[in-house]
Length: 110
Image 1 (cartoon, one colour):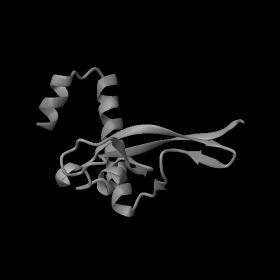
Image 2 (cartoon, one colour):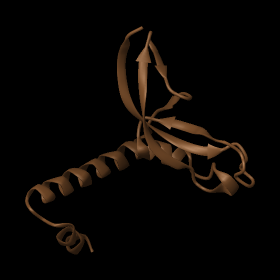
Image 3 (cartoon, rainbow, N blue to C red):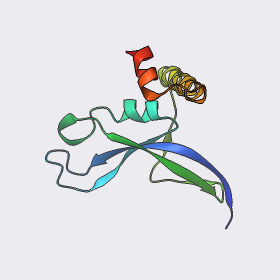
Image 4 (cartoon, rainbow, N blue to C red):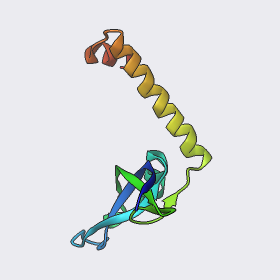
């Protein structure tokens, strides 16, 4: 077997017991972006709370993506949020490279 491809995915985690949270933690949604996972995991955890979202890696072997479920596609709102997050992260990285400290950045934002 050979790994043909890999890509980052985002997993929204829920509990098998959505009443008290005494069950097992399992994937609820696997998505192409954090924003899609956050949207699709909204209200789907214990007592209607939002799912915890983490980054993971999908690996493609023998033309099959190996993940704990199916990958959900981004919608237009998710894409807009992702682009805004990526632009914010890029701007922060530029500011850090220019020598701004976390306190400087907080002063600009706050």
